[in-house]
Length: 418
Image (cartoon, rainbow, N blue to C red; front, top):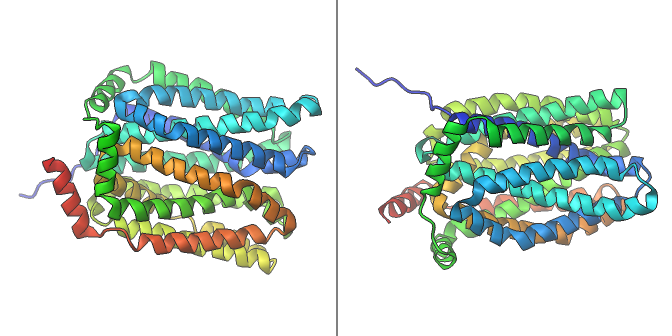
């Protein structure tokens, strides 16, 4: 008799975290896709947001390594609590800042945007690391898939709710509504509910061995054949995500696409992508040795999507503009598989340091490109997308240097033996 295939059980507290991540993702997408639009609509310069984003990335760079060490020393849960509550607070303050006298707003808006970005990073990083350390490695892919599925639902909900809010009132009020909602939900899930399972997972997370900073660097150096190409790929992918998030809607306006239609197609895409998230949740752990394939696939999707978007803007084709977004529908599957692949090679005990170096590198790139991209956009709405497509190609080329199945099995065997 053959053994029955048991569906991976998602821990109750991780279920709760996935709900928080749903709302967090909703808020994050509201911010990313509308902050430029809201400021421009309120009579502020695009450079005001670009300055806040750049300063926020400087804060992220400064805090990344200390934060990563705190994560590796067992403080990821505390950082999750601080990050989620603070992020909700600063998002709410964006609504306040655009409704105060203009002189004060010019000073406060960049500060609030910067602090929102910094605390956004704190929550996302600590949550991913907590799951990596607290959950068994054999089922980590299904847990990441659950979180990413809920994230896609939150992202889709953001677009549809923004459409509704835009019809009823001003889009800026969404920052106040969703910011306060995130504070309430985070407090319930992280501090009150799931107490028994939460304590079990916190114990499991704190029990992971913690290399010293020097040991962690040596471990990463020993895996440089994986670390260097993955860092490069993630940096180039991040450039694309940055540009797409902040410039998609306002670029669409340049070819006659209403922000409402842009939000609608984003909502449809993200809603459809939840199907791939659910599929990944059930089967991604069966393909644990195919991580490189999924990273390459993810990069290829970026090249295709941004390429279609660039051509659509160049030709003033609204059809290609919309198709470029729909091409992203399968993304949750390769994203979940890629995260599991990363944890397997790096090891959960060194996840914090690996992530902190990654965020430092990405943050430096964002600091460098933030204001120049705004300048490119003010020169021509086409120019930023040339840079984004070039970055996507560079990211794809970087993924080809990642280790394959044989190297993955060897790395995991060595880590388990150690």
